[in-house]
Image (cartoon, rainbow, N blue to C red):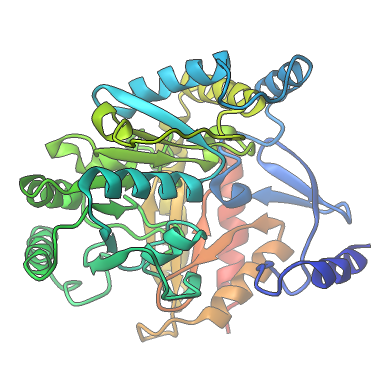
Length: 428
């Protein structure tokens, strides 16, 4: 059955549409932190549809909200008043930390970042954008144009002039040997030097923790230090919170808060987890930035009633059950368990991350050389053991990505860590 579906997939869908596993699986249903495939196999899900099933599969509160809304009206567009959209916007504006915030809903993180770029370049009247090396911001033409990860950037053609800044990866690159304070100073000096050689940019866009890049991050405070330099020149800061938002890092509700010494970002983008699988993205910005466009616009599907109902129910559940705190507690246990296991596996260069956003970098033992084949083998072995994880990385895809739903409990964390330890030990 699955083999037949794979043949049909290959016959009608693009060759570049990536599939995991030598024998791809069809996920048919899920519950809590588990999913089942078409063959009846049960898996512990430590990737959540690419960090999108944020609370749990088939969460009753979300399922009920979606069902009830579908029974009333599913969609009307932004041309009409929309109560669920206004209610969710009010809550997100308050949570964002951005003063006098306005919220615009989209259908994805890619579209959210596109909108942020539109706002920043229009507000600043500049098409120059600063981005981080090893970054990823989506698959659209403009988002690909600012992505600093060759594996996810199929063209160099872009409507923007993009300049790449050091700092997104702590343990690699020319400043890796420095202490944290010296690392930040060196990155700031590099930023100042770069700005001396270009026309004034519109904005810096940065993921507080790089997602597709393998869950890498700078020392806390780097973007706060950048903010001082940017603010002096009127350059905006866009925080791409598509993967880091909603408490996933445990320590903070937003990733930018680890760099918040000089205040919140000018623009914040979000998506993925807020809809718990429904297609929700969006942008938060100060009113003068959001309102800078001098023409009309709408969104046909952004903010549609059924997705807003899901987002409201999901956000309410997350806050009432302190899933940020759970991510901090259970994520801390999981990362220590994985570090302990990795210490006995020479191919593991580093276990990094925070909360329930954990990266395991695989290299050829005794070197810093990426080993994508070994990483792929671990992915397969984990599946064989009943665990689904992701992968990513910079120069080569050799980092494993671990990002379970935020309701993960201690027993499930231990179970997943044990499966992953066996999978890591299978590296040859």
